[in-house]
Length: 373
Image (cartoon, rainbow, N blue to C red; front, side, top):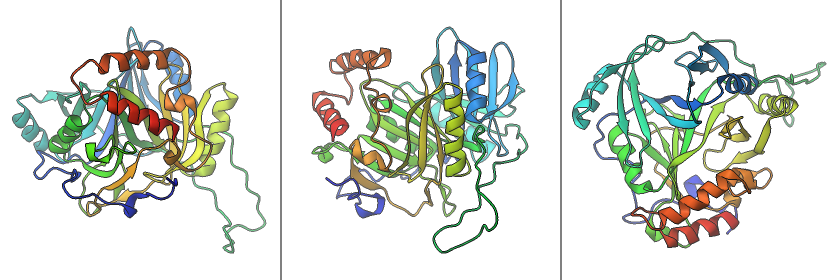
């Protein structure tokens, strides 16, 4: 099947397939606010973060807060831990009354966030165990200077004369958090939970080749702000043998910032996992990196924006279908390069096949076919 045969708008749902949204969600969150991690070495985490393009908001022996250039809350919060792990995602409620509605519906409570963040939070747990925070009324950091996109001469359009083009080889300025991707052994159950509790809606579904009748195996999910366009996905979820973080993505100004920022990371000895290329679902130009703890993080630019009127697209899940152009998806990105992480996933596969979840032998065969197609 050709890589470009199943783009978003070219294939919609079949009869009785998942509608991609809940009929009456409890609330509708407006954005992905921040991500939380625990790491063993905050100094190494900060060095990488600054080389990647974050600015440090605050640093203590126990916590590191990192921000992008846009106004708002920190994009990433890292706390010191005995082991490195992803702790969860925080979504922003439209207003504080939504926290009351959510807490009442889930029989939870509203707590105050630390003074460094301000505001309030409702803490929830998704069916696959992922930590989910819904926040409101947090302090807003003022905007910082962004990295202005370069002036381009394109085709017959000349906008730059008597001037050379020199992209600075410096950290790509992170503008904001874009999305997080999670793997789940209970994709359908967890997907429905996010749609019903947070009012998220699906932009695109992927399914294993030959298994469409069994339903989606990956979902790209956006916030619902009505007629206001938003990122193609704030959250993406994929079926797999373990419940884990896959990657997170951070917007930069343009291709030159992304590419020159990548050269800066290479100069400092950091590992590129996969890139540079352009995705199909979401369309963004991407470049993936490993931080010192092995977490996968992405620079991106020029992503799709959808309003609430667009219905989900459906396409087969294939390794070749991950990008319109760029190098083939690396073994490191796919999680199949030899090492500790792939061994952990292999053990998780053996456990998942014996457990009560959505990842069975048929799904394993589908995943293997998708990874090699």
